Image (cartoon, rainbow, N blue to C red):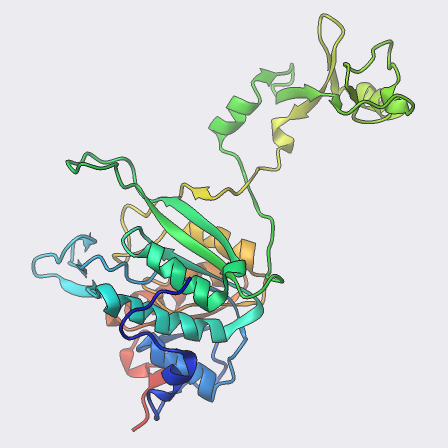
Length: 368
C-alpha cells in the first residue's frame, strides 16, 4: 500500500535538492552533541560529510502532530494548548495535509539511512495523522519491519462535550531496520498495589505470598512426573511439574503449602516477583509541570531506550525538545544526538545536559 501526496520524494531527489549542505562545526565526534538547526539539513550533513550512514542504533521522535497549535511559555507556566498572552513561542505545530505528510516523509527517509542494521525507531504520534504516518513508515521501513503500535495513556479522563469517546491516549509506532534488531526483554517492577492484589497471603514472618499448582497440563503415564507423590496423584490429564525428588526438596525448604484436604501447592513470595513484561498499552502520563511544552514522561523514554539499545549505542532524537530522550540516554550510558530548530528547546536541553547553552556556539552551520 502506497500513500500519494504532493511533495512526496524519493531519497535521491531529496539528497540532490540542496547542493550546499552545511557541516557540523564541532571538531569532535558527532555523538553526545545537540545541534541547533533544521533536522532535515543536519541529517543530510551527517550522511554527506560525517559518515553516519548506518551508525544510529535507536531513534525516538515526537514530531509535530498537525494539531494547528502554537506552544508557548511565560514566566509562570508552560502553555500546551495555545499561545500564552505575552508568552514566548517555543514550538509551532501548524503544518497540515500534504505539507505535513511531505515534512514527515522527507525526515523518515533520512532517518532510515542513518539507522543501523540492528537499529529501530519509535515515532510518537496521535490519531490526527498517525494512520497516514504508519502507511508512510510501511513504505520506507517495510511492512515486515513493523513491530508495534503502542498506545500510551497520556492523561486522566476529562469532561468533554463532543459527540465521541474521550481522548486520553496517543500512539508510538515501532519499527525495526531489519529482523535482527536489538531487543532486551525488560520487566517493570510491580507496584505495591499490584503485589498486594497478587500476593494476598501473609506468613508468620510478615512476608506476602501466593500459591500456584504443582501440576501442569499433559498426562505422563510412564515417567516419574505421572506417579503418586506422598500418596497423591496429579489430577487427571495432568502431571507433576517436576520429579518427586525435587518436590521433596521444595517441601523440606518450606516452599509447599498443604491444604486441609491434602492438596500441595507451591509457594511464591512477592519479594521474588521479577515484575511484568511490558505490554502494548503504556500508562506513563506527561509531567504535570513540564520544562518544555511537549515534554514526555521520562520513565517511558527510559523503558524504550533500555528495550531497544545497549550501553555504548547511539540514540538520536531529531525533534529533541526539552532533551528528555537525550537525558535518559546519557543516564543509561548511551551516546546521544539531539537536533531541534527551536532556540528555546536548545536552551532547555543544553542546560539539562550540562552543555554550552550559548546559541553562538551552534553546532550546525550552513555553507555559504
